[in-house]
Image (cartoon, rainbow, N blue to C red; front, side, top):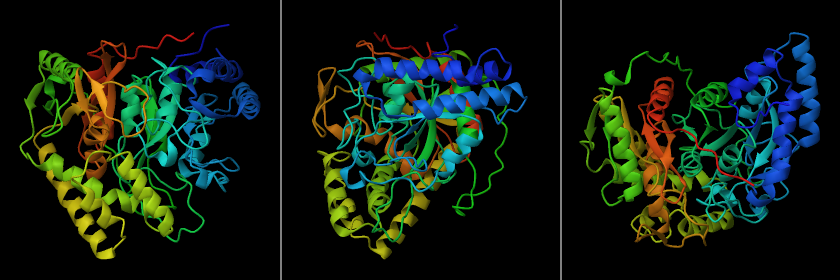
Length: 484
């Protein structure tokens, strides 16, 4: 039998459509690989073996009758644990939600089902999705398949590990502070955070029974894949308005151009003021920019608005409490504030004032923060009127060793406080709402993947995805881990 592990989702779908492979064979191989290898990685928390195999049989019958449901007909996929599947737990690895059973499918889960895909399992997450590692109250700690001493990142860490390990060809994650892009970087994958408010959020998180309202900003569901074609396919399936959220505009997405790299202009940075990166990441970015300019592309170092990055981080600190805690009971809000300072902001005290004020849930302050968001978004858009895209770091370095949350991190002989290794490089674009994609770009001296971030203007995803694919082709691409 042919080996289907590590084949792209688009190729698997084509093989099924053309009758050259069965969904049952493909789904079965992926499930067997999970059962064989996940005992060490803990990438998966739920495996739907019986249901998936029955559905694969059904897909094969449909194929034989010439009935193709959609572009992922018969293809296995996985989902981040937080997404609702009717009748299935959605706990975000937090004991407070241990009994939460989804009452219906999330909108994006329905869209994935309608594509003909087969959901084979759910993937591991940190407690409340609030960490850059994968540990919590209910599930074993998630590990990086390239080296199990290291984390796969958070909060879509289990999904990234599953993709890199060949458990699935596609994963759907979510990103509120780098939660798609960081795990993609740590596991050598493509990961996209779409433009703010373009993917429906209904059913993307368990909701406390006592909650009376639910504000959502900055958080976006997004795809992860080992190849750019799979990433684009999954993005196109989940994006777009839905009756559950009238705030999502009906966007006429422009078709990507056919421009060569020589006709693009980029800005690039290898760090931000107050937030440098490692030699390893800096060299990777310089290598990519050099390869890009060798193709005739135009590149300028830095951005003209010197304070914009720090202002964006201040906005993130001001808005995040409203996103995670608005409408929930005061005692849960207190816990969330404590956890936020112990994870995202451990050792970073400059934003304590903003965090504390936001957790008071004052309507006037919320209005001030939203005005700040509008102004910061426009400042970034002004830069994108001069360049097509921004190339920048996604993290200080490659994946970190698994450690106690909030521990200082040592890399290349330097000590970096916990949040500064990751948060400053991704959260700025959650705050502004801009689309950003991680591309894999080689391996570190420790044989861990290196990722680079590419950011575009609002609603530029078709062009951004195409450009990111061309930029990634200048490097070695996805390198599978060695698994025993």
